[in-house]
Image (cartoon, rainbow, N blue to C red; front, side, top):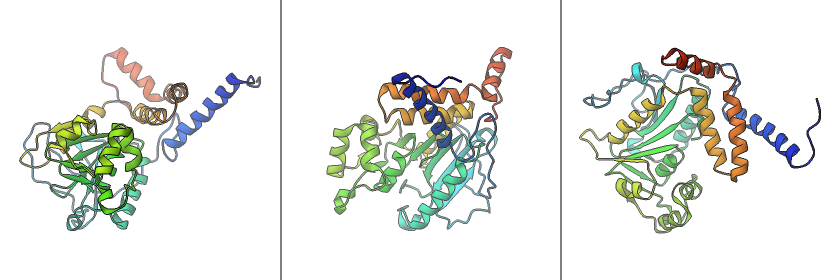
Length: 304
């Protein structure tokens, strides 16, 4: 095989090769094409959720979940199979972060990264009226039905999509305590709403409601709060259901391409996109998608 040409073209070819390797590495431990992930053994709860537009049932959890647990992980079932809900449950501390909660979140993230059955993750509060207060390869949605101040908003900013009730309250208020946001807020907020406005909000420690947050682009959807207090969660479920039919490999790689591309110039971003695209063309899912289109049926993707 001939050596790569010297100069710009050769450098680009080498760079693209490295990007392909980086794409695989960032998709999680053990990721490969074609092939499969090893699903970790889990003992977390599996819960039922209301159908879109249906009456809200009383929340219930598997006996496997201790009501005192600070983090509840639920694998939804039936038509919601593939959706996982991470519920923060520190009522006595208004969902403020603790070392134990951070440890549990880290452990949950590590397990979910390598679970090919997971398609979308919703982060919500199990404490009424408080959200609070991840770097996962699958789509993540923050459902904000109450307060998301300081670390709570930083957790939401780490998600791909944010939805909130109009009555929700959001803000990075750390400067009131003579500190600065230390969980990614100074970096993610400017990327979400622009540098000037992010500075204004952080400098003033201003708190926004759902409508104000939507107006500045901090959240994607705002809903009037319902009687059950879970309007944002219901919208997050609707979005997650929209994601479920898509190819799981493509979803992971699309997220990676977008995230990495936003950090570089357009030319480099296009090279990242090309490298990521190369990760999808050899998959069994791609062949299944083409076959399903030809046979005019819904595809049956396996994440391979």
